[in-house]
Length: 198
Image (cartoon, rainbow, N blue to C red; front, side, top):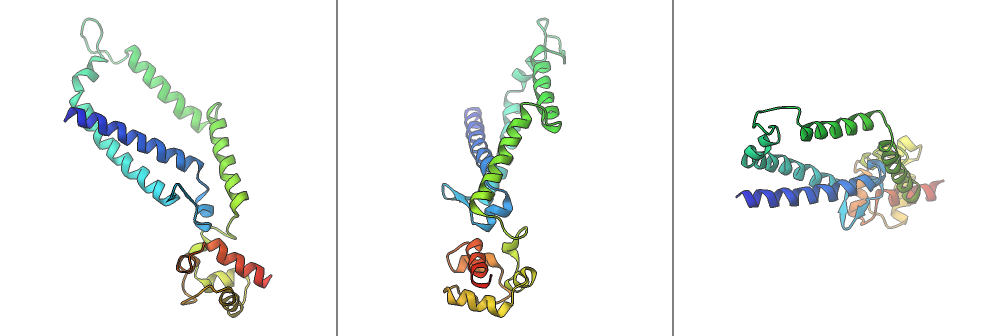
């Protein structure tokens, strides 16, 4: 069982690292959902879901791993006389590194600021490259609400979409649903409306 726990911990860490990297480079949610962004066949939501479930698995397995290796872990807190001492060099180093990462990230100190700025630049790139919705989570608006919010006549919107072969079952359907039923993205639905009516 101990070997299984250790290997499972490794696999969980690999999956969490992979999904973490994908979420790091993924577009902002409003852009990802607007253009139905995927990478390696997976959406941002799927990467996020995997990241969360494997984080839970990692926590559970880590607790079990600590249980099996409790005596080894406790030995890191003992001196040569086998007396328990909290301020060992191993523990102080671990606390120091943890503290530096927390404070450095929250105060946007270097090199943490550079990493976070790089992530921001990637997010900006995706928005510039793929386009942004007219407002946050526009894909979840019903066609009726979207048309009203953007100042379009609903009947003209329906005609423009029909002319382009985009089927709309109900004006109450949101852009995401309409796009999915027609095998396109919400951004494409908007492009048709924009280019036909502007």
